[in-house]
Image (cartoon, rainbow, N blue to C red; front, top):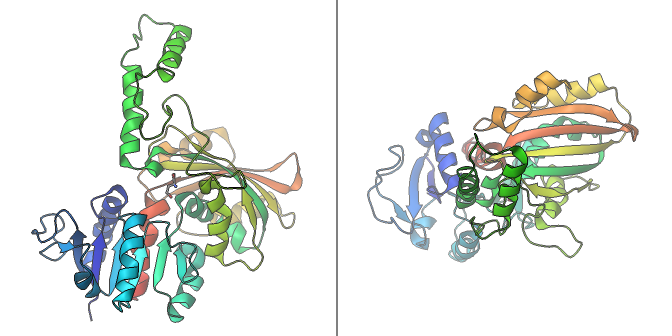
Length: 365
Ligand code: HSE
């Protein structure tokens, strides 16, 4: 029987990317999908012709209860409020969520099927109902280095990140663009020399003349080595997630230590990461390259040369695609067990929307 699927938070940034992907893949034709909203409840659906005619009320438990599967990109507060109410009303459907609120719950699975299809299938068989998308940086790291994890080659791992503005939301992306515009539009490129231009930019960054409401510091022509809230151990929450979520996704018996510094950079939607990987054993570089490049359909091994790095190992090459290039792969000065690598991935696709729509397809199967 065709499954009833609710889609909540479809107007937001992740939700919009999800809807676009579901349209591209024809997913919506495979289900009886209803858009849910608070502001447009009861209105006619003029947005996605593949979905049912009337928009549901995303706060109405009775309406939601009629659904077999709920996919939400509405955010953590919504999940925390609505899911317990649905359970209290004896709803037994599947909850697919982009928000982090339930990720570490014992009765929740973090979904990234190219890495943990076996975990997902076991959990479905065991009656798990909460399937949650992982943190974007974690998912993109695993998509890039999946081969090394699969072969048991990762002893531990340092990941320093270069994270795009989109990770902080749509308004943050616009804030970055506006900061850049507010600064650059005032530069007279014909008359100003570089050092004077830099002086002007520094003045602007330290003035009240640019809006920093979202990032609380200028991001344009700068960077911010702090993402999310502080943890007691000195990490930020974003840094803490790397080890916690990666090990949960992979369901490792002995947790693999992962740490690093998460940095917001003035890019729009691609998260990049620089890795130092301690291998469990010394493996020839050629074999490592093959292991990385053959793990899944989206990872692209980029040979460690300038030409291909500039062409492929950049947000410019990746943005808006499912590519996960991994390059700069080399042994380091620390010895043959230590590998260097760099990866880039689209934060809104593999980092957010894609695992959700794939989870829906897995449930339909
Ligand atoms: N927390 C991520 C970031 C995005 O701030 O870039 C969501 O996974």
